[in-house]
Length: 187
Image 1 (cartoon, rainbow, N blue to C red):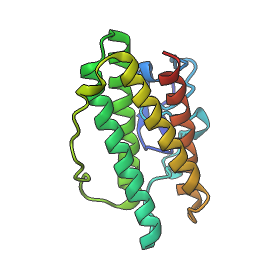
Image 2 (image 1 turned 180 degrees about the vertical axis):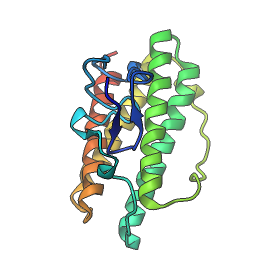
Image 3 (image 1 turned 30 degrees about the horizontal axis):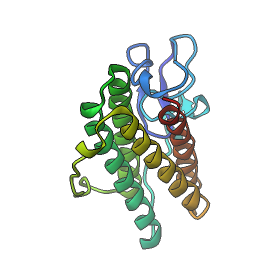
Image 4 (image 1 turned 60 degrees about the vertical axis):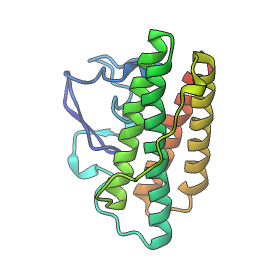
């Protein structure tokens, strides 16, 4: 397979990693049919062979737009933390694996926002105790709520972003989070 670069997250996709995080997707990549970035979930149309089309490099944002990106950064770290803990609490190995993969993808989304905003450190978020949600049903319910909130956030602010590349990133991440809703809602 040809090496591809995700224009959303900047990761290189090749025959060594096209299958990463497969538990977090409804369909599966194969070496002959790459449908999405295995790191952030961006659809194939955002996978390029030209590094100059990467969407997350160098943005000058005013304070208002920077706050939107900062909040998106925090949202994704918060959701990544949730999935990391949920993977430890889930009772079923398939759900554990799905939560682990979702955690990695949410952290990648956070990394995208970190690059866009030029942030130099991770947000300092309060660590929550998710043990009260133990059990697959409660964890999936919480996961679905988080994904719906993320979609609402991205859809609310995508068209308010003046930078077309950032607008694309928000729209793509909303699309990916909608897939996560389907995953967490169908179990």
